[in-house]
Image (cartoon, rainbow, N blue to C red; front, side):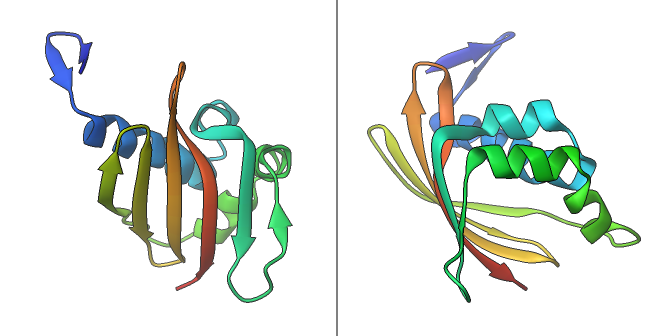
Length: 122
């Protein structure tokens, strides 16, 4: 267990923080949060086309404001469901008005990172 301030954070808390860095970073154009959330070997695929997206491409698209444009004028609530945590692996489902994603995370020396994502538009 890791202590943040005076409160001990559970794996589920830390995983949720990583997932929020990913989604909020995307919708706010925050490159630092996006970069922090993703594993260097990220594999992200669109469920419809199975086109591969890398960490570098996600960081570049975040810097270019792609997520900001998609969220413009919309209320974007982010529903994070941590489905399972086993050792250094976790599975998460995320639902927003724009995206539905299945994420796999891995615990690294730097914390939890998203290593694999399958998504489609909601």
